[in-house]
Amino acid sequence: MCVNMYDIVKAEKLTVDVTRLEIAAPQIASKAKAGQFVMLTVDEHGERIPLTMADFSPDKGTITIAVLEIGKTTKMLGALKPGDSLFSLVGPLGLPTELKNYGTVVCIGGGIGLALMYPVVRALKQAGNQMISIIGAKTKELLIYEDEIEKVSDEIHVCTDDGSKGHHGFVSDVLKKLIDDKRGIDIVYAVGPIIMMKVIANMTRPHEIHTVVSLNPIMVDGTGMCGSCRVIVDGQTKFGCVDGPEFDGHKVDFENLTARNRRYLTEEAVSLRKFTGAK
Ligand SMILES: Cc1cc2nc3c(=O)[nH]c(=O)nc-3n(C[C@H](O)[C@H](O)[C@H](O)COP(=O)(O)OP(=O)(O)OC[C@H]3O[C@@H](n4cnc5c(N)ncnc54)[C@H](O)[C@@H]3O)c2cc1C
Ligand code: FES
Image 1 (tube, helix red, strand yellow):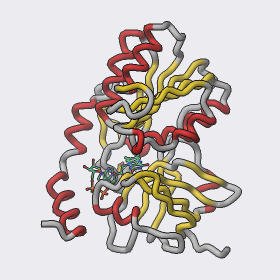
Image 2 (spheres, helix red, strand yellow; image 1 turned 180 degrees about the vertical axis):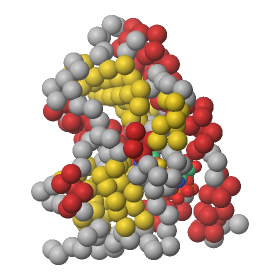
Image 3 (cartoon, rainbow, N blue to C red; image 1 turned 30 degrees about the vertical axis):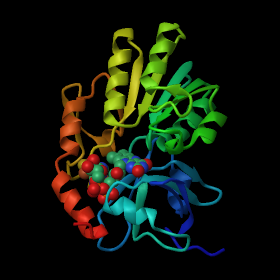
Image 4 (tube, rainbow, N blue to C red; image 1 turned 135 degrees about the vertical axis):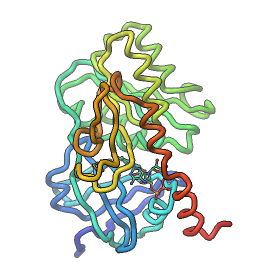
């Protein structure tokens, strides 16, 4: 098959509102590392948005992203089919996950965060760690990347908010039990909704368990020039795109991040209404 740069090679619905896209991008695939993201534009009039690479294959020359359709651009991505092309794709961006043999690592993901967590669990496993994964979603229908994460984990715990699969409750309930059971956790890695990462960081702080979180501030250029992705870490201003996206969860100002991520809510709602034609 002949593919142009940034052609969609495969498009697959994982849930009702999550689409996985495999994209031809040989140069990015040859340099990509776990934890890094790309910035893409769907068409020439579109906005640039950041998406983490859920996989990459230097051999096939492709990268994979999983997209939760929540607004105009992510809905446009969800409608792409094999043979369609992206207008632009830049990456790999951001600092990769710090890979060391820490010992026992607990990786926790929620919702779309599970796609972002998969390459991190795989890379930490390859680095020799004992991997305990805790994965969560609202319902079993919304659980993604369960099989992939299970294959690279030594132990996996599944949680759903409604109890339709695994533990009936939150991922933090399982983490609390592991801590109470004195499982000897050396480091925790969390990616998902801001509230989930904040709860986990608050839980591990008194036990002095180093906790890495992957943040999702609003990004515009993704290369450290515009300042849109400012986050406060340890009282200092950092740029999520070049200093992160992973930071020490015990030092992140989550309230500031939440407030900054809500600053374009009105514009985002208008843009989505215009796109879908809804009143
Ligand atoms: C480093 C990083 C990695 C990410 N990885 C993924 C991923 O793998 N899969 C995934 O589904 N989502 C990911 N996101 C979030 C994704 O970028 C937003 O959901 C997307 O930009 C929303 O665009 P929209 O037009 O569809 O929605 P909009 O209606 O424009 O926005 C909906 C919400 O998305 C967020 N958002 C909007 N624009 C941006 C932007 N330019 N940068 C960051 N957040 C924005 C805001 O919180 C906003 O309230 C990531 C974000 C960051 C910062
Ligand atoms: S997105 Fe512009 S500085 Fe990070």
